[in-house]
Image 1: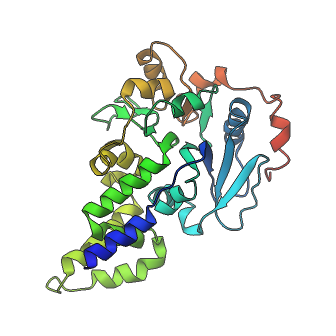
Image 2: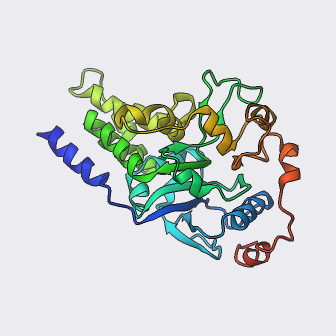
Length: 307
């Protein structure tokens, strides 16, 4: 009875509807009241190359940031302030339901760059998930299997994402309540501390321990392979068999991240649609491709972004 009830609630939480529009560009921001100079470069590229798409800012309550042409989407403050907090939001069905009028979400973090308008082409490729590939190189020696890809410059099918989450909860109903619990962040830390104190022989201790373990892992998701982009790249197809992840070759056409010179060679010395973490990985490679500050769009947003 409990399993059936959980599945019903989970299906309501992950319900889909027929999208009426193609793609929403979603820009996650933080608690900070202003953009850095590199973030302004990233925004300049977005506004110059992709001016005609609906754009949304993911913001915490009370944020003073406003950018012309971008609509604010407010989510609880617990989802902002760190990579781990943002990761919790990326697992939330509520995020994808908020954009259910769109077939795709294009996540554009402000450490990314876009170089052309290929967005509609990628939206009609039939893929459910694509981002910059992870390749084994000096920048990322921990990568054991090259594949797509990072979540900072990513195209994700909204309906397929919700169906993958629904499949996960159908297969493991308890995970629905665990995910709901971990998304509360530090607000449930007193409960976690209390759960830790239960004796090993306490009835249901194994179930309670799952709540504790998941909460702890999501506080530092990378060492536990709990980053959301790992879920979409490696696990979503387990729960939604029709979920189509881009190939490495497609990923290299879409975007670069670590070791862009290696990616350049692997891609046949062709520029991708965009890149992620351009200032972190070999900034000098990207500097010749940066738009000048005198780009026409630049004058539009400087006054709107608190400085």
